[in-house]
Length: 223
Image 1 (tube, helix red, strand yellow):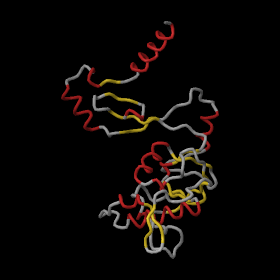
Image 2 (cartoon, one colour):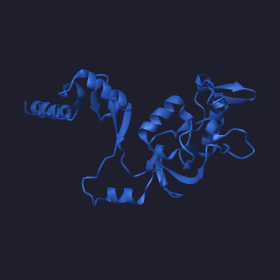
Image 3 (cartoon, one colour):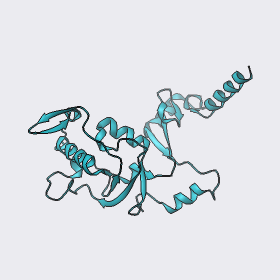
Image 4 (cartoon, helix red, strand yellow):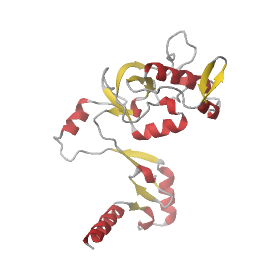
C-alpha cells in the first residue's frame, strides 16, 4: 500500500508541472491567438542547481553559439533530438549511435566540397542551409557498410536513397547524400551545424512544445 501511495503522489506531482492553457482565466479565442504566435517547439536551458558547480564552469569554458564556436579538437556529441531527426531522414548523416564522441577537426562552409576540391558535390547539396559555418567532426566509431544496398553502375548505394526526392532548393540532394555518407563511412567525417552538437559532458537543454490539447510540456517524447 505505501508503494502505491508514493507512486500516485509522484504522478500527481509530474502532472502539476504541466501548464494547461485551457485552464487560464482568459477566453478560448485569446488562447488560440496566443498559440498562433508561438513556435511549435522552443528550447529552455537547464540551469545547474549550484552556480559554482562543475557543469556551470564547463558551460562557461565551452561556449557554442552563433557568436562563439567550439575550438579545434573539442570533444563533442550530437544532440539527441538532432540525431533522431537526421537519422529519420537518412541515417548515414549521423554516427552509428548518439553516444559516440567525436572531435572537431575543422570548420567548413555549405559551399565546401564533400571530400576534396576535385569533387563536384558540395555540403549544401545534402544538408539544408542553417548558417555559414559547419563543424567538420571526426568520429572514431563509424558505419561499417551500407545496410540494405543495391548494385548501381559497378558500385553500391543504400536503398534509402530511393526515398530522397529532388527539390528546387536542393536539386542535387540524392547525389549529395550519397557522397556525404561515403565520406562518413570511409573516414568517419560528419558535417554538423553548431546547434546540432554539444560538449560531450554537457546535459541537453529541454525541448518545450504545445500539445494538441494545449498543454505546454517539457518531455520530448510526448511532443
